[in-house]
Length: 105
Length: 105
DNA sequence: AGCCGCCGTTCACAGCCTTTTCACAACCCG
DNA sequence: CGGGTTGTGAAAAGGCTGTGAACGGCGGCT
Image 1 (cartoon, rainbow over the protein chains, first blue to last red):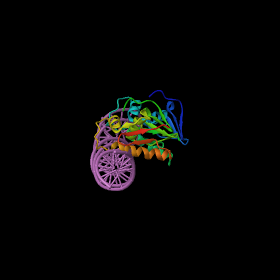
Image 2 (cartoon, helix red, strand yellow):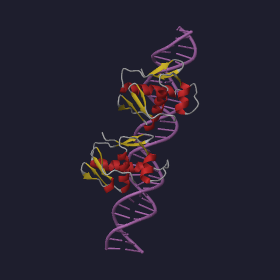
Image 3 (cartoon, rainbow over the protein chains, first blue to last red):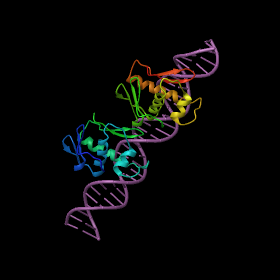
Image 4 (cartoon, each protein chain N blue to C red):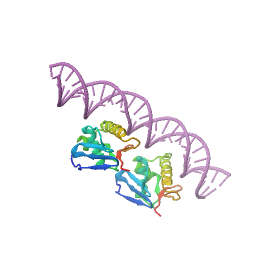
């Protein structure tokens, strides 16, 4: 993935794509490469609704197939890890029929 | 739906079809796809009386049947959500026997 | 090589949200 | 008032999403 920025902050999240790390409330998250790529893609588009297709194109660098559930599965894993790190806070919102949105509020 | 514009303003409403969002008084509305499509169709024709048939053709992309109440039901839902967001203000007007009109005054 | 652990992909199915349909009340207008 | 039109809650139908689990590939280690 390219086009990344050195450092991005979304609420209590800090993402450093160039260093392949992300922090939640100061503590490092244990993310895999795909998870970090997906989180980065969302962070670069914070507060915007991003379609599954766009996410797939950017993170997987391939053409999206309507039946592919990869994005959903990785969203679930991100939610899980973010939820463990920072409870009582929803970062990733579902937009039914479109995709997802990472919120900074 | 196509032919949409990047950004439309009607009174305190702002609609951004390309981003799949609409704001009422600065706050985002929680609209479904159909609701947003219908609001967009009305906004594109603001201050004009639009027939049910035209709305159905544009939003549902299908031929309108006189007995179909879908447009009415979605108008009701839009009114509900707009009313919650901006009370004491009627945006969608009924024109008996013809259709509806979104007003900007 | 064989084993092990981790990661990415795919599948299945429950649960959820949206859309459509229906029924009846309320409304408009001649 | 009467007939057609519109408003709206509720239920049915349809489609989408969440998520645990299974599978296979890959790399590291002994």
